[in-house]
Image (cartoon, rainbow, N blue to C red; front, side, top):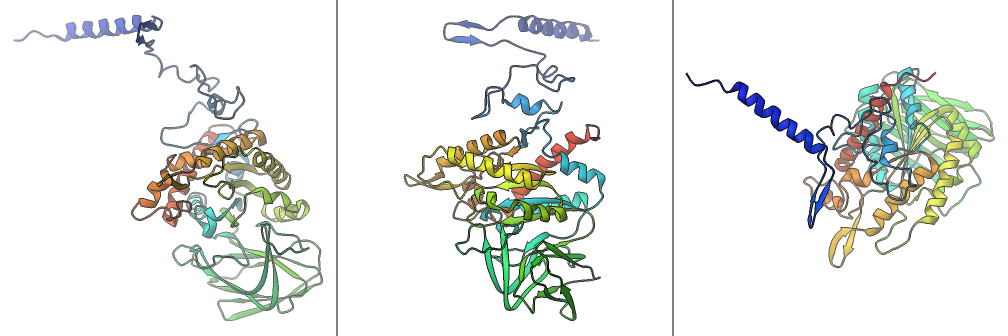
Length: 459
């Protein structure tokens, strides 16, 4: 019989391990052009300190634009679980890393609707990104409905999450040339009805729900008026509106509502803002897209009036997506002026929404023609770095959308994908592209939820 070599093999293995361990005790050595790095067999074992949650290795490189102490080690210090490979995690610069704490507390309590306000420019117009993110979170945490919808929009046929028609309304916004003395609403819009005005809604063409459970109308009526609304094109109701200088809300709840139309027969004193579609519980994401908005205009929202809105909405999280309306293909600015103004804007939003966390979503990739070749605009990276500085100075969370897309020239891959994930302007996403980004953002939020759930509830 052949001799059993198991004992010899075991001794050979132990000898090799012993030699490697002794090697790890030697310092790094440089012999002319050859550099021998220090071997560390225990790297994976002692990568994370189980008590402090920080790595015992030297701190990673400083995040661009940060103070020397603002490193990725700071981001990881709140948990023993570092960001997994392939996931673009939030960078939370708030004290105690608690930007998402209000959201998770509300989800855990499950005492009523949990609301997220998603502010952005044309990148999220038509409920792109926000619609898919809403679907994902409602699948996990409940909820039925698209949340707040303005009374009029520039792209009524583009949105697939709800069908929307309207007639005879004057529209005012944070960026419009026409101004009004009436306060703008939570979305940055105000709508003043003309005679024969009407606004109608039906459930989305491709997405559930196929009915409306609870409808709330937001308006202001300084001199009183009358509201007429029609359910399912058959049942008509009249309701008297009492005069008030404050925000008013009318709630409709009828079974099996598949369409609703709203009219103001006496429109002289009415200012309309929007309608929210929801049920009593679950999670809702309100899409507050505004074409041409850089984000700075939010600082002009009336603080007292916005607080009246928030008394009804109680937002737990504010998502901010901006930057595309600032960068151009040939600019070489450092964006210090934008940084300063956005820090003030975020401070204003903190005053309006004192119980909400804030996440600044970094700029997406965008490409242009550079020397005859389609490439990422250099200003994109400068704006991304500026936005990270804004988040740090404002002590809020930051999500690197540029990195989540795949970095430089990723928008080119989005455009060339089949079916396309982005439009041929190399800037805006298709709905499929929005789905992809929404999944990545949802993954980042859910990873934060996993970390939060490992901590005891706040008192």
